[in-house]
Length: 178
Image (tube, rainbow, N blue to C red; front, side):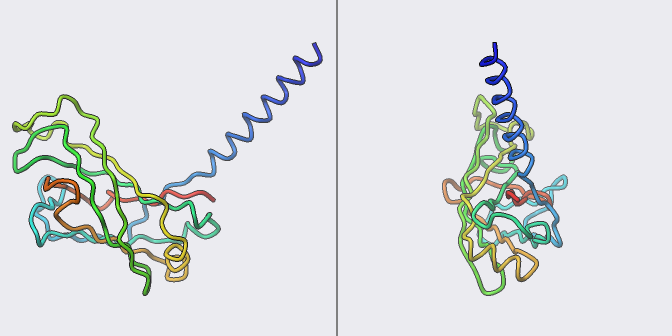
Protein backbone atom coordinates (compact mmCIF):
# COMPACT_ATOMS: atom_id res chain seq x y z
CA UNK A 1 0.00 0.00 0.00
CA UNK A 2 2.88 2.38 0.84
CA UNK A 3 4.46 1.69 -2.55
CA UNK A 4 1.18 2.50 -4.27
CA UNK A 5 0.82 5.78 -2.35
CA UNK A 6 4.47 6.65 -3.03
CA UNK A 7 3.94 5.87 -6.74
CA UNK A 8 0.86 8.10 -6.85
CA UNK A 9 2.80 10.91 -5.13
CA UNK A 10 5.69 10.60 -7.62
CA UNK A 11 3.23 10.58 -10.51
CA UNK A 12 1.58 13.71 -9.07
CA UNK A 13 4.94 15.50 -8.87
CA UNK A 14 5.78 14.51 -12.46
CA UNK A 15 2.38 15.75 -13.73
CA UNK A 16 2.72 19.01 -11.76
CA UNK A 17 6.23 19.56 -13.18
CA UNK A 18 4.99 18.90 -16.72
CA UNK A 19 2.19 21.43 -16.23
CA UNK A 20 4.67 24.06 -15.01
CA UNK A 21 6.92 23.48 -18.05
CA UNK A 22 3.92 23.57 -20.41
CA UNK A 23 2.71 26.78 -18.80
CA UNK A 24 6.02 28.44 -19.71
CA UNK A 25 5.42 28.25 -23.47
CA UNK A 26 4.22 31.59 -24.84
CA UNK A 27 3.10 33.16 -28.09
CA UNK A 28 3.87 36.75 -28.92
CA UNK A 29 1.74 38.49 -31.49
CA UNK A 30 2.44 42.13 -30.66
CA UNK A 31 2.67 43.56 -34.17
CA UNK A 32 4.13 47.09 -34.22
CA UNK A 33 3.40 47.54 -37.92
CA UNK A 34 2.17 45.62 -40.94
CA UNK A 35 2.01 46.52 -44.61
CA UNK A 36 1.49 44.68 -47.88
CA UNK A 37 1.15 45.58 -51.53
CA UNK A 38 -0.91 42.45 -52.28
CA UNK A 39 -4.56 43.10 -53.18
CA UNK A 40 -6.76 43.44 -50.08
CA UNK A 41 -9.74 41.09 -50.37
CA UNK A 42 -12.10 40.63 -47.41
CA UNK A 43 -9.42 41.60 -44.87
CA UNK A 44 -6.62 39.51 -46.38
CA UNK A 45 -3.69 40.66 -48.54
CA UNK A 46 -3.16 38.18 -51.36
CA UNK A 47 0.41 37.48 -52.45
CA UNK A 48 0.04 36.11 -55.97
CA UNK A 49 2.53 37.78 -58.31
CA UNK A 50 6.28 38.51 -58.40
CA UNK A 51 6.18 41.95 -56.76
CA UNK A 52 3.75 41.11 -53.94
CA UNK A 53 5.21 41.29 -50.42
CA UNK A 54 4.06 41.67 -46.84
CA UNK A 55 6.14 43.09 -43.98
CA UNK A 56 5.60 42.73 -40.24
CA UNK A 57 7.52 44.42 -37.43
CA UNK A 58 7.05 42.51 -34.17
CA UNK A 59 7.94 43.76 -30.71
CA UNK A 60 10.40 41.53 -28.87
CA UNK A 61 9.79 43.00 -25.40
CA UNK A 62 8.15 39.78 -24.19
CA UNK A 63 11.17 37.71 -25.29
CA UNK A 64 13.32 39.10 -22.45
CA UNK A 65 14.44 36.11 -20.40
CA UNK A 66 13.40 33.54 -23.00
CA UNK A 67 15.48 30.57 -24.09
CA UNK A 68 17.21 32.00 -27.19
CA UNK A 69 17.30 28.59 -28.85
CA UNK A 70 13.55 28.06 -28.44
CA UNK A 71 12.06 30.93 -30.49
CA UNK A 72 10.00 29.92 -33.55
CA UNK A 73 7.86 31.69 -36.14
CA UNK A 74 4.26 30.51 -36.16
CA UNK A 75 2.08 31.30 -39.17
CA UNK A 76 -1.62 31.30 -39.96
CA UNK A 77 -2.89 32.30 -43.39
CA UNK A 78 -4.77 31.23 -46.48
CA UNK A 79 -3.60 29.29 -49.52
CA UNK A 80 -5.26 28.23 -52.76
CA UNK A 81 -4.26 27.11 -56.24
CA UNK A 82 -5.26 30.34 -58.08
CA UNK A 83 -7.79 33.16 -58.34
CA UNK A 84 -11.17 31.77 -57.19
CA UNK A 85 -9.21 28.65 -56.36
CA UNK A 86 -9.87 25.35 -54.75
CA UNK A 87 -9.61 23.83 -51.30
CA UNK A 88 -6.94 21.84 -49.48
CA UNK A 89 -3.75 23.46 -50.78
CA UNK A 90 -0.62 24.43 -48.84
CA UNK A 91 2.70 25.99 -49.82
CA UNK A 92 6.00 26.27 -47.98
CA UNK A 93 7.73 29.64 -48.14
CA UNK A 94 10.85 31.49 -47.06
CA UNK A 95 10.76 34.85 -45.39
CA UNK A 96 13.51 37.27 -44.56
CA UNK A 97 13.86 37.81 -40.83
CA UNK A 98 15.80 40.91 -39.83
CA UNK A 99 17.03 42.31 -36.51
CA UNK A 100 19.42 45.24 -36.85
CA UNK A 101 22.24 44.07 -39.13
CA UNK A 102 21.32 40.37 -38.72
CA UNK A 103 19.39 39.20 -41.79
CA UNK A 104 18.37 35.54 -42.34
CA UNK A 105 16.20 33.55 -44.73
CA UNK A 106 13.90 31.35 -42.67
CA UNK A 107 11.74 28.53 -44.07
CA UNK A 108 8.15 28.08 -42.95
CA UNK A 109 6.37 24.84 -43.74
CA UNK A 110 2.57 25.06 -43.98
CA UNK A 111 -0.14 22.46 -43.65
CA UNK A 112 -3.77 22.43 -44.80
CA UNK A 113 -5.85 19.75 -43.13
CA UNK A 114 -8.91 20.28 -45.34
CA UNK A 115 -9.94 17.28 -47.43
CA UNK A 116 -10.78 16.52 -50.11
CA UNK A 117 -8.36 18.66 -52.09
CA UNK A 118 -10.30 20.11 -55.01
CA UNK A 119 -8.95 22.44 -57.73
CA UNK A 120 -12.38 23.95 -58.44
CA UNK A 121 -13.64 27.23 -56.93
CA UNK A 122 -14.46 26.47 -53.29
CA UNK A 123 -15.62 30.03 -52.50
CA UNK A 124 -12.97 30.23 -49.77
CA UNK A 125 -13.79 26.96 -48.05
CA UNK A 126 -10.66 24.96 -47.20
CA UNK A 127 -8.12 27.79 -47.64
CA UNK A 128 -6.81 27.92 -44.02
CA UNK A 129 -3.16 26.94 -43.55
CA UNK A 130 -0.92 26.81 -40.49
CA UNK A 131 2.82 26.59 -40.29
CA UNK A 132 5.97 27.10 -38.29
CA UNK A 133 9.71 27.47 -38.65
CA UNK A 134 12.59 25.71 -37.00
CA UNK A 135 14.08 27.60 -34.05
CA UNK A 136 15.41 31.00 -35.09
CA UNK A 137 19.22 31.36 -34.94
CA UNK A 138 20.28 32.44 -31.43
CA UNK A 139 22.34 35.37 -32.79
CA UNK A 140 19.21 36.68 -34.53
CA UNK A 141 17.16 36.38 -31.33
CA UNK A 142 19.88 38.14 -29.32
CA UNK A 143 20.02 40.98 -31.86
CA UNK A 144 16.19 41.23 -31.89
CA UNK A 145 16.20 41.60 -28.11
CA UNK A 146 18.88 44.28 -28.37
CA UNK A 147 16.90 46.15 -31.07
CA UNK A 148 13.48 45.62 -29.42
CA UNK A 149 11.93 44.38 -32.65
CA UNK A 150 12.05 41.77 -35.36
CA UNK A 151 11.12 42.44 -39.01
CA UNK A 152 9.62 39.70 -41.21
CA UNK A 153 9.29 40.05 -44.98
CA UNK A 154 7.31 37.48 -46.97
CA UNK A 155 7.17 37.56 -50.76
CA UNK A 156 5.68 35.64 -53.63
CA UNK A 157 6.15 32.97 -54.94
CA UNK A 158 6.20 30.34 -52.21
CA UNK A 159 9.00 27.74 -52.42
CA UNK A 160 7.00 24.56 -52.87
CA UNK A 161 4.33 25.71 -55.35
CA UNK A 162 3.13 28.86 -57.10
CA UNK A 163 -0.06 28.91 -55.07
CA UNK A 164 -1.64 32.13 -53.89
CA UNK A 165 -1.05 32.98 -50.21
CA UNK A 166 -3.13 35.42 -48.16
CA UNK A 167 -1.89 37.16 -45.01
CA UNK A 168 -2.96 39.81 -42.53
CA UNK A 169 -1.59 41.66 -39.51
CA UNK A 170 -1.92 38.73 -37.10
CA UNK A 171 -0.63 36.01 -39.48
CA UNK A 172 2.69 35.72 -37.60
CA UNK A 173 3.46 35.18 -33.94
CA UNK A 174 6.63 34.20 -32.12
CA UNK A 175 6.45 31.05 -30.05
CA UNK A 176 9.00 30.84 -27.26
CA UNK A 177 9.78 29.36 -23.86
CA UNK A 178 10.66 31.46 -20.81
